[in-house]
Length: 369
Image (cartoon, rainbow, N blue to C red; front, side):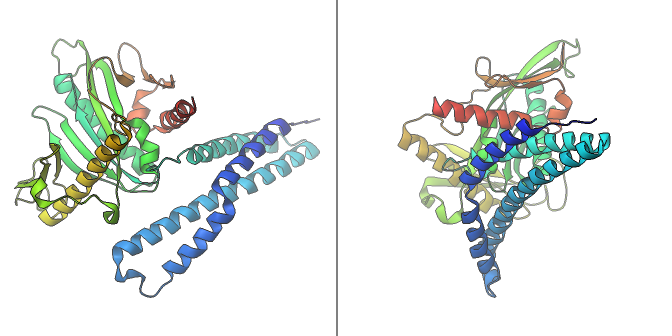
C-alpha cells in the first residue's frame, strides 16, 4: 500500500511562507494595487507618458507579486489534497506528481524569500551595469563581451527590459567596455551582488601556442535614479562631446554625429551613449547614467564607506569575486559564497539565478553579523 508522507516538508514550507507573507504584508499589497488601479484608470493618465509608465509598471509588478503569493498558497493546499488522493488510491503517478510539485513549491518559496531580503534603500530601482575589460589583453576584451552577453541573456530569460547604452569595441576582438540598462523593479537589488572582479581561465583562442590564459573583467552595478530624484548638475560642471558612433553598422549608425560623451569635470566621471537613434536621446540617456553614478558617489561620501554599492573594482589578481574556469576542467565558482556549478556554458547563456540567490543570502548574513 502506498504511504506517501511529506507532512514535515509541507509544514516547513508553510512556516517559511507565513513569515514571507508577514514581510510582504499582503493586505497592504492589495491596498496599493487598488490605489494604483484607480490611478491607471484615470482618463488623463497618458497626458504625462513618463508618469503613466511608472504607474502601469508599478501596478504590473505588484499584481505579479500578489499572484505569486496566491499561487503558492493554492499550491500548498492542492499538494496536500494530491497526497491524500495518491495514498487513498495507491496511485504511483499521483505520488510522483506530488513529489515534483513539492520541489516546485520549494523553489518558488525560496525565490520569494530571497525577494523579501531585497530591502535596501536602492534595491527596488532599475540597474545600470558597466562592464570593463581588465588585465589579460585580447582575452580580457573577449571575456568582457562574454559577460555583456551573459547579462543580456539573463535579462531576456526573466522578461526584464534591457538595452545597451554604450559599447566601446576593442581593436582585435571583444569590447573595452559596455554599459547596459536593465529597467525593471528590483533589478539593482537583484544584480548588485554581481558587482566585482570576474576572472576567466581558459585555453586562449588568441594565442597561437594555445597556452592557458587568465584574464579579468570588472562589473559595476549602480541604481538608476528617477528623473525627478536626480542630482542637479550645473552646466559648467560638465563637458559634452559629440562624435560618430562606432561598431557594427545599421540604420543611422556611423552616419551622423549622434553619439554623446559627457565628462563630469569635478569628479572625472565619463559616460558615453551611442546606441539611441538621435543625439538628443543619447544625451538624455547619458545624463541619467551620470546622475546615477554621482548619486552613488554622494552616498559613499555621506556614509564614509568606500565603494558601498559598486565596490572598489580593479579587475586584476587578488580581488576576484568569481572564477570561470574552462581549462583544464569546467567550473564556475563564486569565491564569496562558495556556490559553484560545473557547466560554464549554461552560466554564460544567462543561468545566473543560483549565483544571485546565494549572493543575496550571503550579503544579508554579512549585514547581520
